[in-house]
Length: 145
Image 1 (cartoon, rainbow, N blue to C red):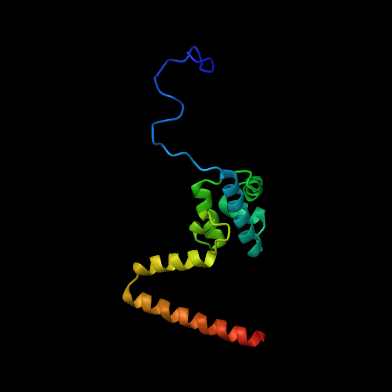
Image 2: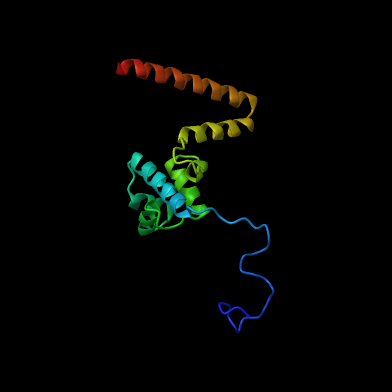
């Protein structure tokens, strides 16, 4: 018997490593947690929302919000869904492992996915709205010059 095993534990014949071929999580989980917290904080601040207001709207305690934004607390899937909804960002943006992830790229992918389930008339309206936004952006750029 190995000295490091519990002498009172039953011998199951299995190691603590799990079944063969079971993948292990990559190092850097804490970094991913900090990145997600940072993105959540950036979105909240961009919208001018306080942690207290977000706490009240989501039911997540304010102290937990602070811990999440500092990467000191994990976010469960329900909490992340609420925060993504409040911050008007696709859930995937907060989960993206790329440190330079662009929320607009995620929004475009989400939009394409959503459009697939729309009626032909709704897709036509969506295209018209996109054209309107494009013209508005051009006008805004010209007026800034």
